[in-house]
Structures are given as C-alpha cells and as structure tokens.
Amino acid sequence: EVQLVESGGGLVQAGGSLRLSCSTSGFMFDDYAVGWVRQVPGKEREGISCFTSDDEPMYFANDVKDRFTISGDSANKTVYLQMNALKPEDTAVYFCAADESLVCADLIDFDYWGQGTQVTVSS
Image 1 (cartoon, one colour):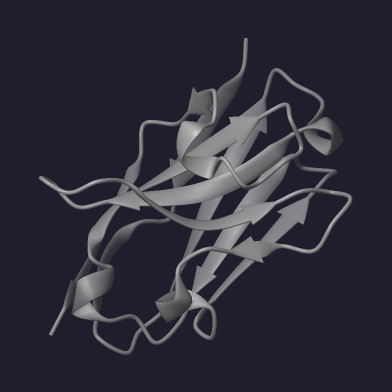
Image 2 (cartoon, rainbow, N blue to C red; image 1 turned 60 degrees about the vertical axis):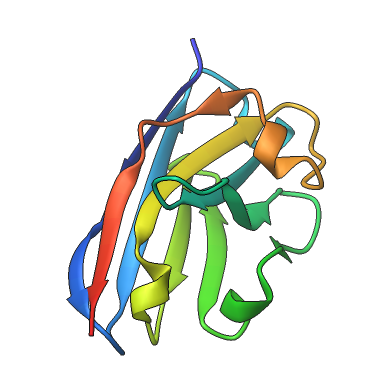
C-alpha cells in the first residue's frame, strides 16, 4: 500500500523558513515521481515542485523558484521541500503526491496523496 506522510508544517512569520518532509512507503522510491502541491480553501490545487531520481527537479510555480528547494533521499524514501523567505501568500495546506509514471508534468493528477500539512505565514 502506497503511503505518503507529510510533516514539518506550522506557523511562521513572513521571511522565515520551514522544511516539509514527505515520508513514503509501499513503492520503489526511485521508480516514482514525488511532488508537492498546495491548496488554499476555495481555490484550486497548485503544483509547486516535483522530484524524480533520474532527472532535475521541476518547479511549477514561478513565485517559488528562487525560494523553495525540493530534494529527495532515496535511502530514507523521503522527499523534502525547503521553503525560505516565506510570504503570507504561501499560506496553504501542502500535500505530497506520488505517481509511478516518473513524469512530473501531471503533478495535479498524481495517483497517490498524503493528508496534507498546514503552513501558515503571518505578516
């Protein structure tokens, strides 16, 4: 059974940093794409970034490219999202998602999802 468990969310002041973790199990880590998606209540999900073991990371939101960094640890089957210089508009629930296609382009439509972790950035 594929499982994705997010952690690391919380409340932080604008300009601060957080590191989200997505602990995975139930699949071959190197054979899946794993990414981060965020959602604000009442709005559509927004793809943030995606990691695969065989290609460069992808960033889908222009506003985060210079502030967020995705990385993966194959030994621990965990994907991280380091978020720096956080802004109030980054406030959202952040979800980890995985797909066996190894293609990041369809991040929003990935097959497997975690429960999400809340990130709140105060001004």
